[in-house]
Length: 178
Image 1: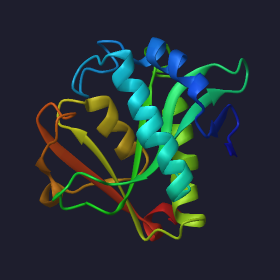
Image 2: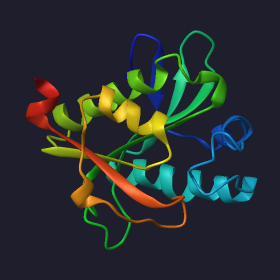
Image 3: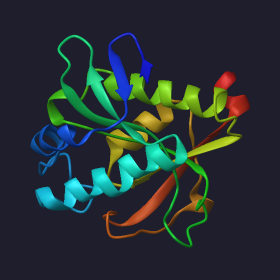
Image 4: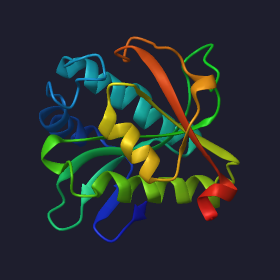
């Protein structure tokens, strides 16, 4: 689907569920995402959300695969922000989740950059948001390195996945191209 220097961002298959669960369903990775889930819960997310989004919307949180060894590192991509009643509901949202042994190597930034290019170049998005919680400093640190701006006026009380208040960052097409 998309390639960067080191990565492929591609559509999901059900064969991706087992390595996704094995590598990303850990206490460290899931710390800010409501905690470790059962394999059945994650399989349902892949099937009923990620695969369905790619089929119905043409975008999803795609599999991030390292080209050097075809390892599934996690996901990154775009979805429609769907926290009902939130100030960003319906907007383009970029998001990522990578396995712990892939942290600190620039993979999330590389994949997020490709996803933002897709949002602005292919989808003609005027703005993209990213969501996290205040305690997840690595995530909002990446948002800042991507040139996104903290938008406290858009923060909201979070859904079940959030450990605390959801904080919002955004970037517009003109800012991305600057």
